[in-house]
Image (cartoon, rainbow, N blue to C red):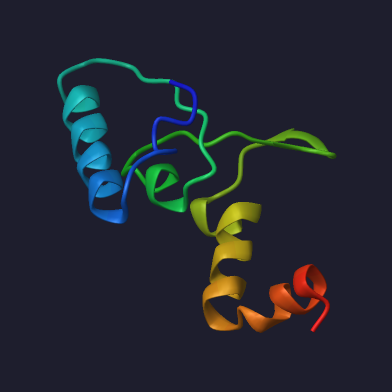
Length: 86
């Protein structure tokens, strides 16, 4: 799946995590490309992160997207000052 979380709300993303977890528990495999820290947090997921460095296998809390979301939620102004010129 490519970015299945794109149009989803926070709650719907959690439902997708539940569905993915259930599918895998039933023996299925899923390959999901996402920028969502919620979807990336599926329990037991094998994570591959692609970047300028190539491909790596980080823990969830080492993902660049998780780092950026945490920083944004803690201090949105640190991002907005560059985007909005404030």
